[in-house]
Amino acid sequence: MKGNFLRNQASAAAAGPGHWNDPDMLQIGNGLLTPAEEKTHFALWVFAKAPLLIGCDLANATGTPSLAILMNKELIAIHQDDLGQQAVCTQNCDANFYSNNGTIQTYQQQVMIGGEAFVTVLAVNWDDDGTAAPVEAFYDFVEHGISFSKYDNCYMYDLWGGPDAVVNLYGQTTYSLGTIGPHENVAKRIACSPF
Image 1: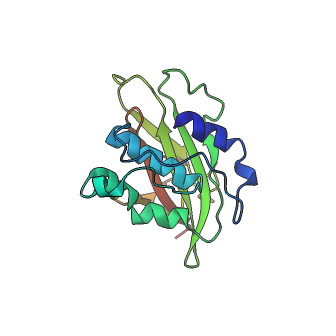
Image 2: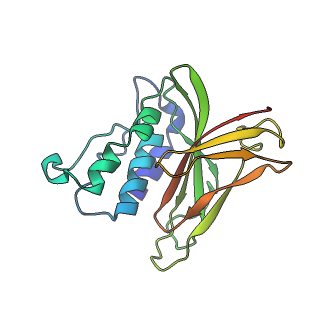
């Protein structure tokens, strides 16, 4: 999964409506991944705007966490947005993710749904050491163009259904996206304004 996604990212600029990159079908529900890995797999494919080809027998997935992941309406809406931009890496893009280094890699894209524009951010902990401690992911809203000022008010919505947050930057530009364990992710929808 990791290799397919990272190779797919090499041609992110070429993706768009009518010509999508395809890192292969989803492996969710096949018993190959942990529930956390299945969530990360789905979020990665959504942010890559990859075809969401379900590779499991749905009759066996009924009532399982796998089916709930595949039916996440918030992430599907991001996948099907009006702009169709594949997310690009914005943080720790040159790191070696084939080692156990605990580094968080972050992807960002602009999204338009029903005339409303916002930014989505996906942070992934690629650490392959199953005993590693979770890592807190920090993100600079001004540096990455989400906010125009370090005094903006921002609304951060958790695409996995966790608690939403109203963020007043109060003179800071960096904000915590959350704590991420190995192979886990956080996916956020963020909109900022000066008032």
